[in-house]
Image (cartoon, rainbow over all chains, first blue to last red):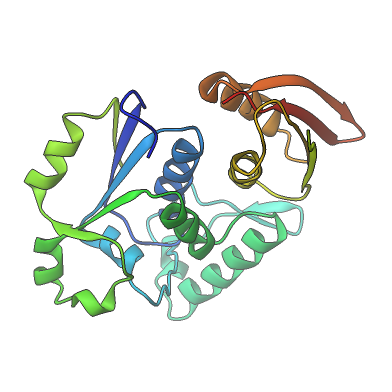
Length: 163
Length: 75
C-alpha cells in the first residue's frame, strides 16, 4: 500500500477495556496516516476489540492513576468503593461522556479508520479457542493466526509495540 | 489547483491528523490544504506529520486558541 520502502510498525494488543483500547488504535491509525505499514496482533483480552458488538467498559478497581475530572477537581476512587456493584458502570458512562465532550474519537470510529487505512489485523487463534469466540463474532477483515504469524511480521518492522 | 479547507476544530488527537491525511489523499500534488484546529497538541503533531510524510508545512498560525496550518501536498 505504501511501497516497499515504507516504514512499518506492529502492535501487540492485549487489553480490551475502554481506556486501554485507545493507545493501540490511536497509534496504529496515526502511523498509517503517516505512511507506515501497520499490523495489529489482537491477543487475550485485546481480541475483544475485534468483536462486532463493542461494549467496552472501564474499571476503577486497582487503578490509582485514574483521576476523573469532577466539578473542578479530580476524583480517585478508593478500591473499597470500586468493588461495589454499579461503580464500574457509572465510571464507564462518565468516561464516555468525557470522550464525547472533549472531541475524542470513539473506539468504533478509530477501528473503522484503521480498517479504512488498510491496517493488517491478526486475531489470535489460541485466544479464540480459549475464550470460545467464533469467527462470526468478529468483524470482517482480520486474519486468524498465531505467535509465529506475528513474529514473522515483527522481524520486518521498524517499530514493535506491546500494549 | 484546488486548495481546500478542513475544519478540525473541537477534535482531539489523533482526529485532526487522520482527517488531514484523508483530505490530502484526494488533492493534487502542489495543492494547499488549510487545517483549522483547536487542539494545542496539533502544533507539534502537524510538524512531525509533515516531516515524516514529506508534505510541506507552508506556515502555521495561532489566534485566540485557533490554529491554522497550511500544508502543501508534495507526493
